[in-house]
Image 1 (spheres, helix red, strand yellow):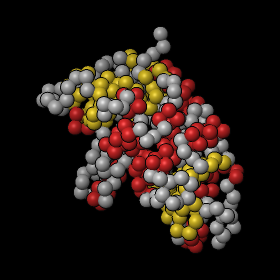
Image 2 (cartoon, helix red, strand yellow):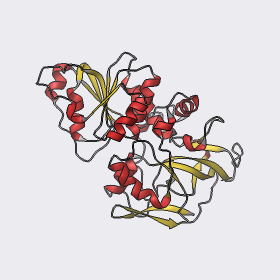
Image 3 (spheres, helix red, strand yellow):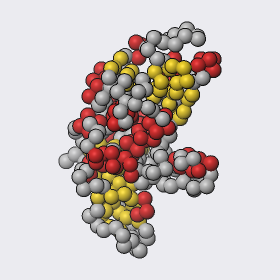
Image 4 (cartoon, one colour):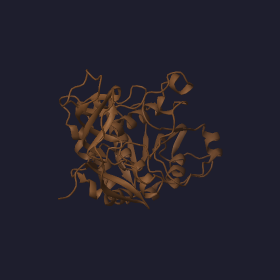
Amino acid sequence: MPAAVYVGGGDIAVRDLPVPAAGPGEALVEVSHCGICGSDLHLVLEEFARPGSVLGHEWSGTIAAVGDGVIEWEVGTRVVGNPEPGCGECRACRSRRPSVCARRAATDYLAFSGAFCRYKVTPVERLLRIPDGLSTRVAALTEPTAIALHTVNLAAVEPGDRVLVTGAGPVGLLIVAVLVTRGVRDITVSEPSSVRRDRALAVGAMRVISPEELVRPPMGVVVESPVAIAFECSGHADAAESALDQLDFAGTLVFVGTGSKPPRINHNRMIIFELTTIGAYNYDAAGFGPALELLASGALPLDALIESDDVLLDDVIVTMHRLAAGELPGKVMVRPEVSS
């Protein structure tokens, strides 16, 4: 089968790999689409991944075969993967945050079985059926939608809150769209790319600005139009520092985007205004089910959240560079085929 394989040096190449076999309790899934995630960009472009890795974890597909002992799943069923559950006993799991389960091992990106390929194997206990009214392609947005739901839930946003989102890439856009479904209307998006600013308006932002328009107030002074909650989705240190400055008394800054350069946090401002910072990592304890329901509900502007053109395996690396440059605002879907 064809696969987009990380070969080192910040590059990806198409390789022919053996089709994996489904073992007991597993299903072989023919991948329909797999989204390119920001973590894929970091792993490849910053050379964190190990050579030989097949990345890609935002996938949807159809069961092509099942292993021994599998009787509850049939060939032809459309599915997405559900996250691995936590131990259920540690402090994080007891607080319904299994993504940071204390007993979960770190991901091994050499042994990692990603979905930038034609087929992948997954335990059937971690499969979810795609609702009849939802296309298989759109269902590949389930995982990032689950992240957006988890992020908004952690922040405990209220409909009347004023909100700032810094960074209008795929995750920032999804957070804006989820906020709108929760009745939040006063949403400002800060983004340097004009293409992404326009897309933020399309998914429901009330206003968009360039990062340099965010003022840096003196110590002890609240900005003229403060926000209750800021979601930092860009991963840039200066964006995080600026977002903190926009918070009102008792405001909350939620770190969503990752980056290589850590910000300098103004602890004095945090003390004076009793600010809170939160890191949002992955998913709620409910897993991907609520995200699938939201995608199937028709409440999200899917055409604005997903780029219209699919990318084939031999264009993955070029597309990653375009995403990193801010040229593409929405989620890019990879179709596991090669150019003829």
